[in-house]
Length: 159
Image (cartoon, rainbow, N blue to C red; front, top):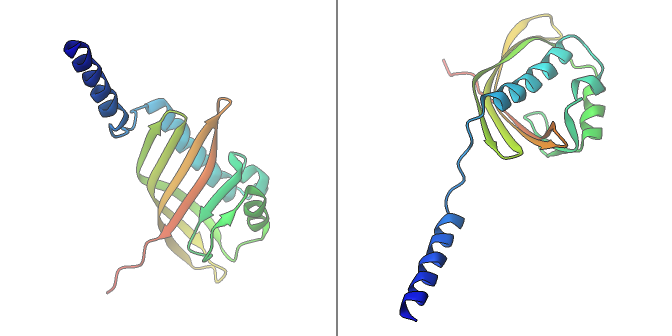
């Protein structure tokens, strides 16, 4: 009786330890490459002046975004599409990610990176464009979808 109770307590304790163990990201180079390629293809479509629908082809319908241009969250792919269709005052000439990291948790992948780009403003001046970025992707029916992004500006250093 005591032995059975002891085994039951040990099993319960073991399950509690397992259930409260921290989630650790899976190292998956194939998924990391797929996720980074999705971000880069979005930039390539933007640089090539492709239609907004092509630029946002991997964006989920319930996509959300935080960016430095708006004080509120952008909700939905439809809103993101409408905003992307408005010609910007400047043009992105180059964009890439520095220090990329992809954390994979089953069918969820989180891409964090420092964006490094070059833009040409409406005054035709060329300037650096930098940001701290996070993109969250979810795999549904074998396809990765961008469900959330946060783009935070990096302030210019004070001289």
